[in-house]
Image 1 (cartoon, rainbow, N blue to C red):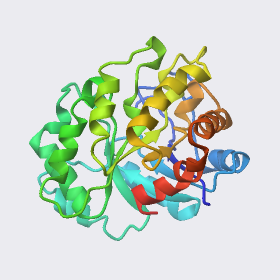
Image 2 (cartoon, helix red, strand yellow):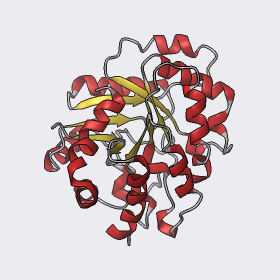
Image 3 (cartoon, rainbow, N blue to C red):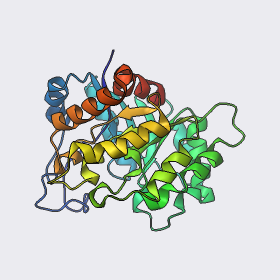
Length: 280
């Protein structure tokens, strides 16, 4: 079974390009495939999906260049202006990129809690999935309450289900023990049978210094109960995870929790589901 890390990032750091990173943070440095590959080896991970960290076409091009040079980068989730009037033409320019598996917009930073439901954005995501790409949904709990409706709008009138992937379990407020509206939103959106969910980024939603396995387990167990083992996907969220844990810690944490809850699903969660969701 091929083991896949379905969510990680690369970047060449500059304060202007990454203004969300504090200058004294462990993240305020370059992170390249040369840094990640030994970590994959150490955790017996065979390949990865590189996900955009900046909202620019240049970011997508750069990640595809990295993927072309490094076979273990199995796919790229890039960025495209999904609200552009000429979105169909823009998507056509990417049609020959075999490692471009999908796109993502950083919805969590949008001030409008209902951004997902705006007509031009829905139109752009529909155009994306119609061309066989996936779409990664990055939201916080206040926006997660709209994910079910968003999925319904994207899927309306289609004969095949769109490939949609929820990032980071919709970022529950683990550090403060937050449960609602996140828990109900997860239960609601999980009723969309084609929606996958990444169990990634959970340690950074907990207290970076004092998180415990049991704290993470409460939220992962809810994701498992709602989505089931056939729609959960492992991702490290490296290097962002380094705010709270090193790469191997994250792998071992999720592997241990999955083994405890549903050991028979380890191969699916650590690879098989990612292959289905991203078509790699």
